[in-house]
Structures are given as structure tokens and as C-alpha cells.
Amino acid sequence: ILMTLTVCLKADGLRELDFSDDRLAIVLSSLGQDAPWEAYESDQIGILLRVYDLPTRRRRIDSTTVKSHVTVTEDGLFQLGHSKEHRPDLPQLKINQSVLDPLGIPLTTTIVSGECADDPLYVPEIRKAQACIQQHGVLYVGDCKMAALNTRCYVAAHQDYYLCPLPAVQMPKEALQALLEPVWTGEQSLTPVFRPLESETDQPEHIANGFCYTVTLSADYEGNTIKWQEQRLVVHSLKQAASQEKALDARLEKAEKAIANLNIRGRGRKCLDENEMTTKVNSILEHHNVVGLLTIETIQETKTVNKRAYAGRTAETVTTTTVTVRTSRNVTAYANTVRNLGWKVFVCNDLELSLTEAVLAYRDEYIIERGFNRFRGKTLGITPLFLSSITRIKGLIRLLSIALRVMCLTEFTVRQSLQEQDAKLDNIYAGNPKRATGRYS
Image (cartoon, rainbow, N blue to C red; front, side, top):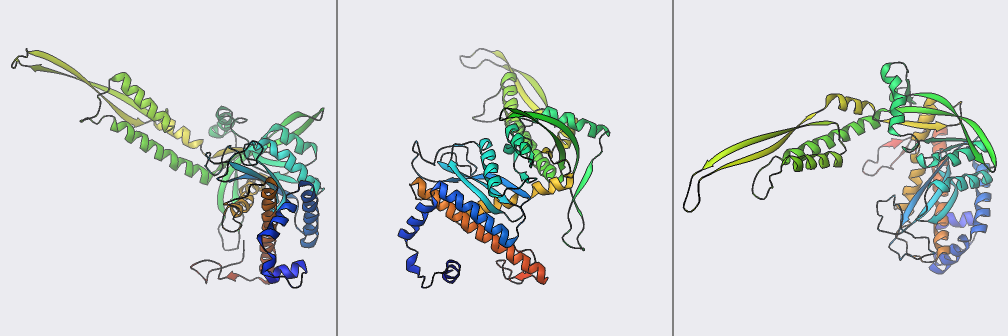
């Protein structure tokens, strides 16, 4: 590493002592300044694009969170918010990035406090990406939070394209079922989507089905009404449907077992009456999200026992009522639920983008997620974070984003060399040194 830095920095006599904590603090303080960083980031990307001839027609935008055990302050970056790491009890900051596809190399990086919502971050990030590479006709790929109408309007107004799924708020369950009704009746045909072959010996893998239709949208942008056409791609993912069906079956089994346990009698178990049993059963169905999928039969058994007189007790007749429940699966409701699994609606204002291209483009979303995993993992290791200065926290994240660029470029050049030489790289898989690959990533 020292030799590499010596060559890259053209600094003769570089020593390990030159990388002390004090020097790091100076670097972080410099990188933490917003205006100089934005100018450097733009110049750096311009140089990389020219030197490596990188593709720029497709970009991805997403955000991640970084948690820390720090004290929350009113003006700090670390705030409590929706945690993508499933730790809502810890304060966090948020990193928003745009990356080039298919390399995953960071194009722009924005750092905001942890309580900020994702939706308003897309337009500023797209604006920064447009300023770095002044080019139109670019496809921006994002998740469902990118589907806000204002974001789509901004992209369309600047002669660019977007591709993202619609959230349930914009495409509720009832509207999706109405779109799928012609499919069930056979009026709407489906187009199959296959994964591209990596070699001539591979078999085509059927991954999805779907259809498209076009709508016209309008929205206000800077005092003007913008109108544009948008194609909506209704896609059925086969693997996602199978996974959701498996999860549904597991929930049904748990619900059936929990309801059957209500029938168990014994010490410490309360005998429920009909109303109490109904309340318990409904609670179980709602908890496992299987309402309507199980048919419930309530059975009441009345038993009369004549008790003779004994000691000071008089003879009496005691009547007890036992309530039990039985479950059976509603075959019709189950079939209707299963056929609706795995469907998602994507929106894109590039009317020439085919269904297959759109599905494959969105499925490469792991490209940007891989960079985030490197931030949080051992490769770059942003956590644990012990800095308290906002400037130095920003500087550290920006320094790591430079390191991520170096990693992506290294993979890019190695992959290119392997393709040119028609060679494979081995000794990179732990525990299997003889395993080789021609797609280093």
C-alpha cells in the first residue's frame, strides 16, 4: 500500500509515520468542507470518465444509514429515525449516493442527518449528478421512494429518464387487482422475461412475466405545467412469488397451530366462552395476516352432570358448555391470494425501454447496495465511529467514498483485462483456491 501511495502521490520518501492520527485529522478537516469537496468531486469524476472511458447513460440512486452509540444533539448529524439496520434505538446519519452503472462507482455523495426522509433527497442528488456530468437522456434507477411525483416530474422536465417501482400508496392493492383482472380472464397476454445467457452452454432462465401500458401525467414545476408520457410495467417475479407463497404457507401453519392450542384443556388454562374464543381467533388471524384464508368452525358441547348429596352439600344438576374451534383452509381464497403474489408495477418515462431491459436494469440494484455493504462491513469499516466533529465525520465518509472509487476502478480494470485475455482469476475464494472466475467483482 505504501508503494502504491508513493507512486500515485508522486511523493518520494513517503513513510508510515506520515500516516499519523494528526495527519488524518488534517485530511478529514479538509474533506469536511462542503464547497471544496463538491468542486473536487466534480473534477475527479470528470477525470475518471475521460481516463477510463466509463459508461454514463445509467445511474443509480439510493441511501443507507450508519448507526453509532453517540449522544444525540440538536444540531448533530446523528439523530433518531427510521433505521435500515433495524436499530431504531440508536442514533444514525444518512448517506445518499448516486453511482454509475454497471461499475457502482460513486458519482456524488451527500451526508444528511439521520431523521431525514428519503423522498426529498432524490432531486438534490440528481441535480448534483447532472452538474457533474452535463448529459441528457440518462436513466436514473431507484427504489419506490424515488417514485414521488415531484421527483419524476423533475427528471422528465430535464429530458432524462427514471425507472422505479410504485409504492403501495400510489398503487394500492385494489388498483393492482384491477390491472390483473384481464390477466386472469385471458384478455391480457404476458411477455416472458429471460435472464441473459453468460455462455453458450447455459440454459435460458425464465425469471418473470409482464405487460406494459402507457399513461399521460402532468405536474407543476417552477410555475409551469409539465406533461409527459409514462409507461407502466406490470411485472410478475417468479422467484419472489415462490418466496412469498412459502412465507404465506408458514404463516398459515403457525396460525392453525395457535388456534388448535386454544382447544387444549388442563390446569392453568381458562375455559373460554364463545365470545372470548372468537376474539382470540380473530387476534391470531390478524397477527399472522391470514384473515379470510382460514374457515373457522365453532363447536359447542353441553354436558349435564347430576351430583348427589354429600356431607353438607345438597344434590344438584350442573350444566357445562365447552367451546372448541376447528380450522380448514379456504381453497378459493388461498388460490386468489397466491396468484396475486410477486406482482409489482414499475414506472418509466423512456417509452423505448423494453420490459426485459427494465426488469434486468432494476434487478441490478445490488450494484449500489454492494457499495453500502462495503461502507458498513470490514472492507471500509465506517463503524464503529468515534468522531464527534460534524466536519470530520463528513470528511471520513468522503475519504471512504474515494476509497470505494478506487476499489470499483480496480475491479473494472481487472475485469477488462480478463475479458481481453480470455482468462480466469483463481485463488480468490476462501476454502477453494482452485475455483476460478472470469467475472471478478
